[in-house]
Image 1 (cartoon, rainbow, N blue to C red):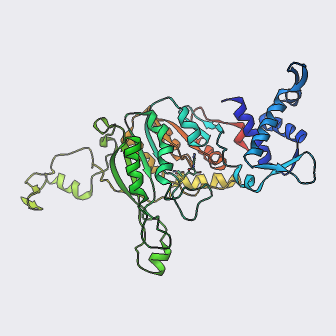
Image 2: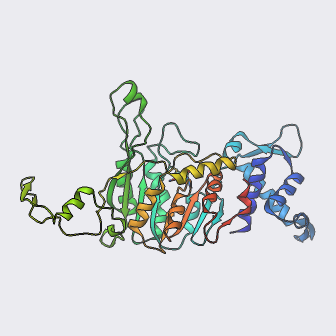
Image 3: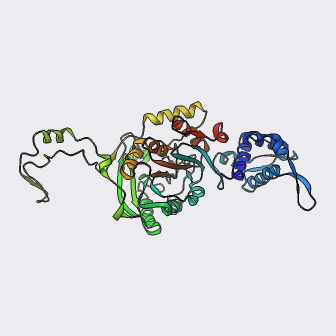
Length: 408
Ligand SMILES: C[S@@+](CC[C@H](N)C(=O)[O-])C[C@H]1O[C@@H](n2cnc3c(N)ncnc32)[C@H](O)[C@@H]1O
């Protein structure tokens, strides 16, 4: 990672933690944060034609300070010469990676979790991705703490974020996106058609083909939309979310349902034991026929149906919340269950393949990929989420936590 980017992060972090600061305090705290000996910050070398001596590191710190100023994140303290402090916007924003920041937050032998925007990181990737499973911010009317695009800008937002992933997608690779069906038109019980526009934009602009739209039926979904289902009573409670599966090459798609077979049902086991069907029958005007002995041949398992039923809560996530609380960090609040990642990774990749999540949240893709022997790369732009997620990987071979974020 480029040293300049690290130092930018150190300067941002120091302002993020402290009230007003003079420049000499800033140099000292940045040195401590970056683990640079103070003498190194103080070291002066001749610069320019006059050969006057200056500290290059201090100059770099001031340069990053000016960048923060231009981004509207810090300002001069009125009436106090030489002191700078966070602006109100900075107070809220500094914990989110600034557009030019990309910092390796933690890694294992198999994967990388990067604090930074996916738009900053993925255009620089030059290695084939077998699968990207991601759950982008939904176009919620009441935005979450991490920021959400609107329904009107959604197709464009998704295409821009996915473009570099598509550029790196291995032939027959897949992109799986979980989004919300429950986005309503302003003041009305009717739903937005932003998903239809998103699917068409992904086909038209990114050249991907739609393999399936899989409903994720979530029995533990909170009731809602309260206004329309519980108060006005003109809608039903929501119970599912769509998961879209795209590939760049449907003829060569790298998918194998034999990797995700489920146990046979009790009824099927009874049929097998009885040597298959004992009757002759015809259904749906002859479209389906049952003959004596049908379903009597033992098979390795049941091919899953294209409806995924699972709650969103899982033991792994409960542990994540305990870890976040222990570190005094806010927990990311919109997770996908790990079993969802497990399913798509098993179905669409093989050990050693590279899996990605561009909107990483709790880095659950990394956790699932790690357990299944796949390589992984995840970006998440809220530092608190990445830091808390790191705890989940402590026992993974080769685990390394960037000291710069260890105590964020
Ligand atoms: C719906 S959550 C994803 C949750 C994730 N699937 C999980 O199970 O933990 C979306 C996440 O994307 C992050 N995010 C939004 N825009 C981003 C960007 N441009 N680059 C990286 N992360 C981003 C948000 O901070 C948020 O944590």
